[in-house]
Length: 378
Ligand SMILES: Cc1cc2nc3c(=O)[nH]c(=O)nc-3n(C[C@H](O)[C@H](O)[C@H](O)COP(=O)(O)OP(=O)(O)OC[C@H]3O[C@@H](n4cnc5c(N)ncnc54)[C@H](O)[C@@H]3O)c2cc1C
Image 1 (cartoon, rainbow, N blue to C red):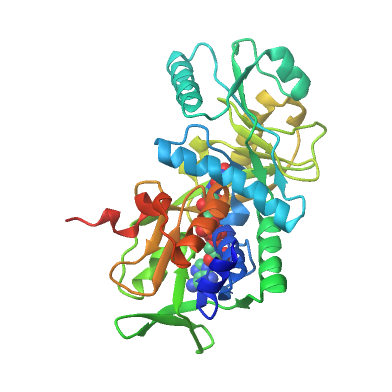
Image 2: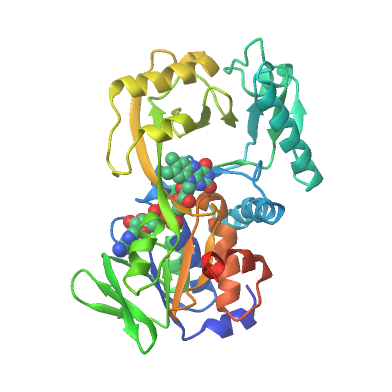
């Protein structure tokens, strides 16, 4: 950030609703740019979707080109953040992908995706099964897999630790505040928003209110009469007990996706499972469901067979209706800035930088595709 930027935000008060990945990253950048930032979080930072995320940071298979490049920048921006904040919450060890040879449609789609990504300058390497054996000795590809690809720039994030690191730096280095309270509504000032009303009956005034409430953002926007075109899309993740195997990469196989989850644990995701869970935050799927997840995982990582599932995490993706971020001032409600996205773990660092540049008065063409009014029917 330049001195010019600091000058532009000095004296500006900004309230951010939500201490997830998005709110925390933005709080850090805005406070660094001189704004007086207050984050209002109803539970603890990272307790929303951010703490229930597969947290793969990736650009592979993201479309169209501008969105792919935003995601690729998102990965690089995480490395900048890690260099600034310190800590070991970021794991860039690469993402592995494969399909079964007999699934011709999936193989052809994979080939097309690989070509597309390379055309756009995104590195995807083909690796032999020997190399996979060296990289991940405890994984089994199976006889019907002859092609494996790796995206070396990809990885995963320990999201709650990242969120804490961001907020600690925002408060300790740049004077931001974090309040533990629920926002009950946006408050009016003239024709726009002048702050937020809190559950204890007090009000917090702000020049700008950023709605980073994740899956609850539409509810917040509605209190000022704005309609945010998004839905809550549930997803489920299973975490094993510490496993007698090594795993470094994020793995995408036809059976399921896997990644390390700290302390030797393995996280399991299978998209087809997501339709079987409800959006209730603490809904816990039955043991047979967990067993089924374990069986899929053990086909890729046999050392997982017979292990217990230690945790089932159900989260709601904050999903804009076209799947792409919503970032910008609400056109009908001055003072209200909407910031909602799926892939928010990948995108939080880059969106925080771009939104800060915009609030500092800069022109930010990279955000133009993602304005809230793109959904308006003209
Ligand atoms: C199963 C699953 C897998 C995923 N996998 C990936 C992935 O691999 N890669 C990736 O990049 N993304 C992934 N995502 C998406 C990603 O996790 C989200 O996009 C991201 O976490 C959103 O962050 P956020 O800060 O916007 O929302 P949240 O983390 O939900 O933060 C919003 C915060 O606002 C608070 N809040 C809400 N309402 C109020 C209120 N009224 N008052 C005060 N506080 C309030 C909440 O408590 C919460 O902490 C996944 C999501 C799920 C569910």
